[in-house]
Length: 278
Length: 321
Image 1: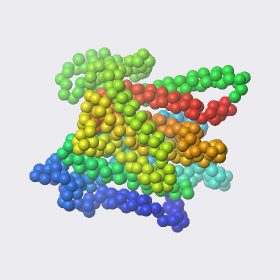
Image 2: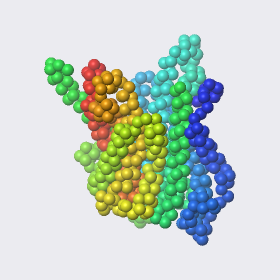
Image 3: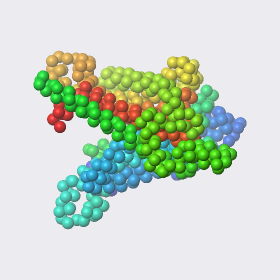
Image 4: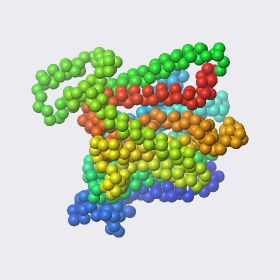
């Protein structure tokens, strides 16, 4: 979304709905937790206190403790950094690569565009989670692999929107007028096509960050992400799986935070989408 | 449609079916080729991967294995050989299990089909019920919030919560086995919930859209009540919208099966996939890619045919085009 557009929205629209405010607040808090975890907890996410093992939620341990007596809340807070890094990183890579593919396809002659368009459709046919899983089969598991796999899996969706948006802008009256006035093709692309394509892609990416966070948590729940003691949401959930009979809180609370993150990105993303379309 | 036109339409259906089948084969071939290419890009020697890091095997043996597996042939020969075997239904042999991939997949297919089949039935049941019953401002708000939560929740977390509550606290269901039908219920619900979230969203929206169409107004003017209107007219429209989700749902089921089978410790295709990904058992991975592509192609074919049955306008449009 361009700065101008944001300013126009800020000036002309009614104040955002209450759920959008709540969702944005949660996301800002999450971002703060990722940047400065000590704002939210003074406890060490890796500090094992065997004497405190498997305690239920209390004033001291909001989300209880796990098998080794580590504070689950602290682990979730520190996990925000990793999850958001994967979420933002993967979405950013997917957005940029998708934008480039979409631009190239949309600005190319018809046959080239048709081939790329076809490839995008085939890529879209595979669900992101499966695609990410298959990419990991090929590049191997690990922390970096998660970002690459999730980014690769998300590219087709961004490329599709970038392509269709490029086609729309390219044939719009103002671009044709600019061309008629002798504006060079490259300047047209930079000044008109890219800014107008970026808007919808950024809205997509807002929701995409949430999707990427869940996918990352799912993959590392399966043991394909960082190794066990790392405070990462999927890892915490997978530790919690074996404690469900004795200490359900180890799995329930972190999952709740993952779910809230996705809900909030959806709410904010939909609100942005609605404003764009309005 | 007059009698004179019918044979022509019949021929066209035949031609279209051929087109659909051609499209199916193209998608399957594309997936198989993409998979083959991707595997050729894998760093490392497949023989080393197959034997594992710790294996004490002489270089001669490795060379013999390489020769046996045709890994010394030029890539094009390998590719054509691979396609040839694929046509005969031969998916190769697993590096790790030393079994034909088709057998490995075939052995796990029934468990996963039972799980996903029950899940899709439950999802249809839930979403049709909400689509039918939910009307009015407040009910719609509450239900759409629940839908958002269901769609946003990680599948495996839903599973964990269900186990914690229904298996450990209430003891209604066994925790983790493949043994009985009861052990299928929680995993199927886990898989069904996110799908019913999105399906009921789409069905409800479809019903609302269809209800504002002229034919719905006419029907209401004839004195048709709302339930009858839905049953006879608008549900058809909403179902067409629901059908567009088929591929998405299939993907969610397949991806979800990997997670759900892990959460519940069930055997199945998902577990095989995960095992193959972790062990980098590439022939199995490739086999699974092909099977998934076939599933997608079949679903798309069925959806296209179902569209025509649901919406007569499409048949007419097809003729005009």
